[in-house]
Length: 253
Image 1 (tube, one colour):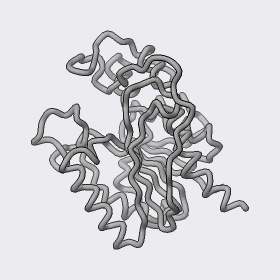
Image 2 (image 1 turned 180 degrees about the vertical axis):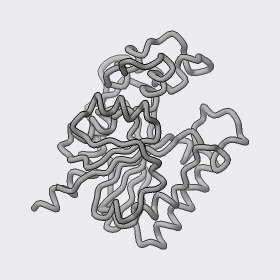
Image 3 (image 1 turned 135 degrees about the vertical axis):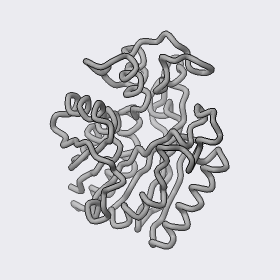
């Protein structure tokens, strides 16, 4: 089994998906102590620590599968302040730095928001990532995936970047889809209302849209943030099954 190292694990939505895909998670990290505590409650079998993932070294990821839900605020269209986008955002995480961290990994997946391919500063970041990957001898593919392709009842696309030294042609295949209505996806600022972010949904309702349990013992603001930033387990499972699982099978064949 090739183990997984998960960066920016948050509450554990992607963790749940990868476990459902049959993967072994060696370590999960997040910088927010509240998220780590909730992650430990939901997934007590997975080692999870508070850590700035920028400090992870290439040696720690050598031969591993890496899942990284890197900070999306710099590329989010919900960020209305142009002067705080991209490199100017305090949560900016250089994709080039991640490529250097994961250069010896078996395969790495970055999960993020569509702004990386739709906004000019995001496109520039991707071009820089591609140049660095080429310098390191890595292949890179970019995939924009609607969540409802994989049974998540929400109107939201997510971006997946796959990086590996030996990267085969990768075509993500849609799943069974959703039978029923789609809803505006939960966001971290759900309880603040605003355009495209209807106020009034409870954390329990938003957790249901993500396919995750509602956090326990935290404020409503923290709960909305945890839920809005979570990766729906069904979506993470589908990506893991199509990207990571074939590599695991290859290794044990």
